[in-house]
Image (cartoon, rainbow over all chains, first blue to last red):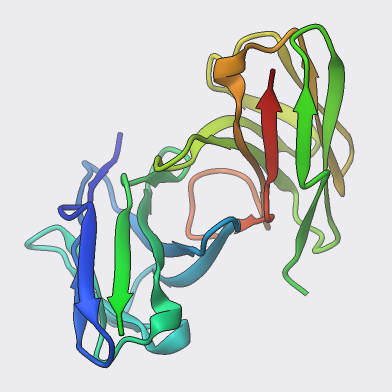
Length: 111
Length: 115
């Protein structure tokens, strides 16, 4: 089975500052890793995913994430955030079970 | 077009009512999912349909009854629900079933309130 830990439940950050949302996973098999974003009162939208190959993955809206197998991490980064990035961010893993989500990180961008 | 459409967006029902949530996708996906999401929590898997057959039921109470009439449609029939069943119900689909790197696409969800 797989599991995901998102280390921060809330991350406040000032507009135009960089941000990193942390995600660690646990699995006994090879995994596929995802980041989803959920804006208020909406469904989930895929930001990016890691399947194989290059460990640096670029996604939509200027986000990127780096897969680190030795540290079992898949942290999400953005060099400069906007007010519109305020949302809930979910890290998720799929291996030999259906998609498993972390508890989410609430990113609040402050003007 | 990567769209999963859910209706209704909002539903209020009494504990003795029977209602249904509907989901539709036209991406040719062969796996469809129902998730339940409570406030400030991650989505929790309820059911998975693979090639129109129920493949996973995550021990969901029988007051929730899924149905997949064809490869594009997924319903969730609701009967005798409890107030604690109030939540956002998310439908999703992916190209193929099974744990893999396939992206799961989510709808906007149906907000259910049980009174």
